[in-house]
Image (cartoon, rainbow over all chains, first blue to last red; front, side):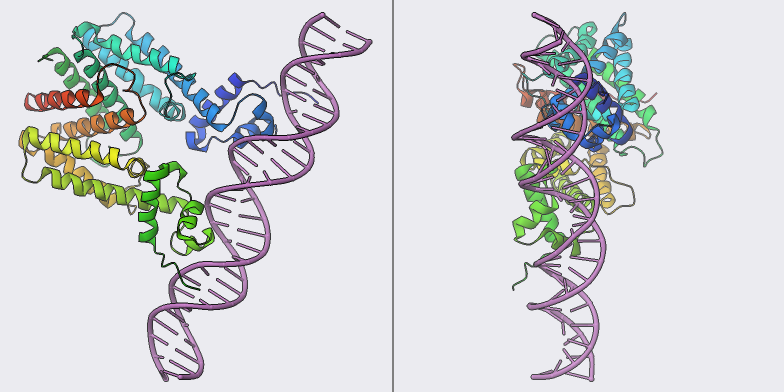
Length: 189
Length: 189
DNA sequence: TAACTTTTCCTAGAGGTACTATGCAAATGA
DNA sequence: TCATTTGCATAGTACCTCTAGGAAAAGTTA
């Protein structure tokens, strides 16, 4: 009998695809096993348990987001960098809703997903280089940006912005403008 | 045999308590039935299914958040109103993590949770009365505030802000300041 | 109060998911 | 080529969701 050629990485990537198709919360060990035509018990040779799979998916998504962020930021600064990063972030969430959701699970600081999370976080901080804020202001600003991007994307996907006349993309563009202004006029106390 | 005296409302409230204790994703029909000392099948006389229970819990949480927001905004305007609303929002999430999580599920616009969601949304808009923004700017600002509050709370709870030297409460206060400044200096184009 | 109706909870059972233990067969490599 | 390791299967436990049908409590009417 031929083997399916499974591995933790292949399962993680397939899990990510499945998440984008049917939603992160519907990705089960059983569903993943069905996709490979094997029994669910077989997956436990590669992953520790269902939570382990989820953490691996989160690490993959965070790494992909960090890569896109790095590409978006290359050669840009100030307003351009801010907009490019923000749009890369929002586009990723739109194109890969399941992956994006997976990246939101709790990650402990010494787990396998922590590295990817730190890389992504460093990219957010890189946006601010052009604004030259002193600490702890830069940290506050990083947190503001991350909060706003994540909050917007997450509310947009939950349908919170779809009941009014205002296009949510227009709001997004406007919000990026105001954030740029906020950062350029930021004053430490 | 005595009856347990169940009803959809009691189940919803008990589900909310359970969510705060063990986490929203761990609230199952079975666990709720155990808490009342009845069999799980008995709950289906009161709730349609597990998703129905979750939507009811979301509606309860949104209603509670709208109540707290209304109380926080009463008699306040401008910066005071902004800070009071924001702190009420963050405090609710801290005190009721399970309820807060329940409020984040997707709600369709004509479902039973939509009313509560609209009330909560109206409260966010009320913050902006003192800033007198024209449309569509006010809508953009509402979305910015909601995004930032939700994003911050959600990242804070996921542990994203706990790995640096900067206290997350200090960042929160600073962010509220900058948002106030942003709103007072908002310019329409 | 007796009979009838409705509601509430039960038992029983089907089907899905997570996970463990164990065994065999395929791949690896000495 | 033979021993070892690895990959997948079988079997089985436990928990969850939900349906069907029945019985007893509570409410209603005569």
